[in-house]
Image (cartoon, rainbow, N blue to C red; front, side, top):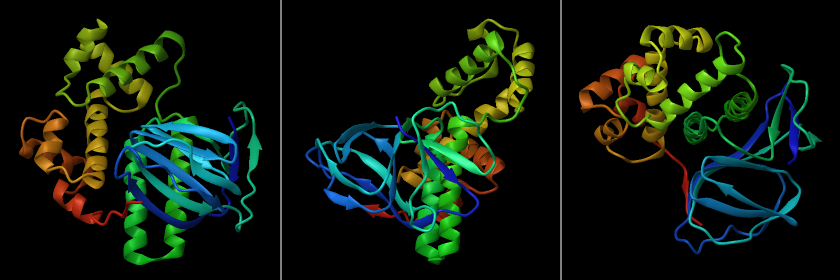
Length: 285
């Protein structure tokens, strides 16, 4: 799999962006000559797309970064939903270094992105993509759009290669930490209690909370709430679901508790947050 190295001394050049929903299961991506980069973030279904003689299947929760110049086309029909963004790099030269392996030295002046990969935290990407579209629609400011796009690509790189906060741990401790994170993701739509997590992993509740904060830098209860709110933000910007239903689907017993928790974390009510990013760019082809 190709790995692109982009220098980040200057922002990327944003061209356009949107959200696409296939009208039916017979839809196939159009055939065209791709003259700039395209980032596709899959939110539902599978996309069957090709670049020249290379065929890809991009699954829900994955992204594909397509490199120009190429002949882009769909090689199989499917019903799917995805965000897409077109951009140029290095004053339209579109000439990143391309590597065949990921064992590279990471620096502060470059980002590395595989051509195709699973997104660890797609909810964060959805919110940023929605913000980019909203800014483009409201302000039409090239500088703002360029830096918003650059933030999205840096966020994706950070999710793939940079670990967040806390104390470095190895071996069994790291396995316990990742198991806890996976368990929370598995039950994120339920009313998860710290005591239940401790019982599941057969650890003392106090020990587990201390351990998790030491590793992640965040208290376990706060981490769970933050994860729920990240998902809530993605659902508020990416769907038309009623706010009460979103709260219920994330394990809150009523709308008041959900709204209070959301405002505590974000400083805004769910309705105000949704209004702030209401103008989604939706495309049907």
